[in-house]
Length: 638
Image (tube, rainbow, N blue to C red):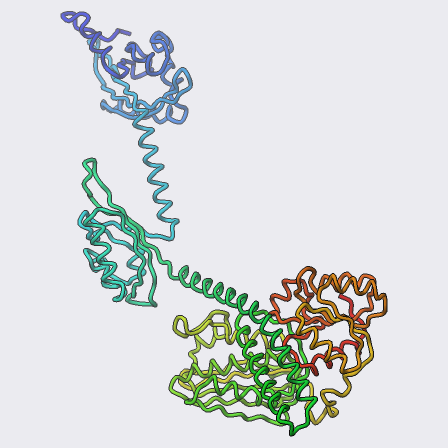
């Protein structure tokens, strides 16, 4: 095979020209791909000696990348068969194992013997290929990021005029493409936010500074949304702004959730604050109401001092109810169920309820004698009534009528929503604005409210639902827009006053001679409880702390029938004291008392619901009755 011809008149010049080129100049037989000439750059680019290129008839095929050799061969054969010059890019494996990208520019020539020859130049394009690949990967990552993100991309020209279609924004706002252009996107911004947003955007464009704003929009269709928008200027090499690019996202649900969380945290903080205040307040009320009870008991009915004491006792009772109302919105209640005549309880609560609803709303009581008695927590009944009546009041801004109705319902078949049995019903109805089907379906959800921000927590009906279910009952709601609301609470009926034996007088039946260990760190409460129980005949051992009580038990060494202990005290808690005492005296009966809210009691280790417990403030007669009740039961270890 003839070598690549060189012009004789310029001997040496041709060789210098070939060697100066940055690529591999070559000549080969198009039928066998046997190289007949290869320039010295071949060794610099791929690392193989020129002699190896020329001596190995299969050199090109052997060192072309396995994924490229077949299609490259076919491409060259086809181009040669059709007499075509051609160029293509492929990979070869260098002597050191590197993959080198080559751009091969090939010319088909005929030599002086009329034989076809392939002549070409292989240019190393590896760096360009790597850059292109990195660009492709970068674009792919960008597309994946845009697709995956909850945000959408927007662009604007150097003057801040929107010019690119934004499908996400169109879907959110309901604007057409042509409406978004220029400043058209501002049309759906909430009127109260629009001027602020316009001013902020213009300031960013004028000064070339990043832009970030959160504002409300009013879509053409659908509810108001909240969006967060950010943008930065894109500059050319000279520093001139050529366009703006940014993101926007719908943060409505996030903001609503954050607001609910903040409200819940505020309620929790208020509840904790109220709990600490209530502890001291309830201790004071226990002393005030207790000694007021003593004065009433010790004086004749016509004694002026007794009448004054009655007022003291009533005021203390109102203060205790106020404390319960303050705590009701936030605390998890430890139930202390007892037999309650529903009608008298509703009647007693009506005075407080009338003050809640105001003068433009009439409160009507329709209390059936058949309603009977239910087993519920007294404070929970008050809370339930308060929540239902307040909801009714809020549904009648222009006034109306609230009716509280009690009755008895006996279910004998399986078609009723209520299970079979004897039920006492408490119905609260109003003549207010009512509820739509959508609102009615969510009425019992925690934090759901249709009231304006700051006017409701959304916990009223959910609290009612929790109380009723906790008491073994059922609650239903009937309402239509413009036709008022009826909430029906059904509780298991226990009986009625007429069906029970006459209740003993407050002082009768609560006496005893047992020995009681009284543990209370508040001096006033300790003295009151001691006097209340000693009046009933009990023998009292008193201590101001758990450690004092343990020392007293060790030194006295006598039989103790009941431990009456505060829950939260300096040092050991009441629960820790009981745990130590019952290890040696498992038959010991226990009654806990506390002025703390129930969640605080649970945090200090008092057992599950169902323990013997009396909430401060309590009347001396209530304490005596509770002590007698616990002593008459079988021992319950803690």
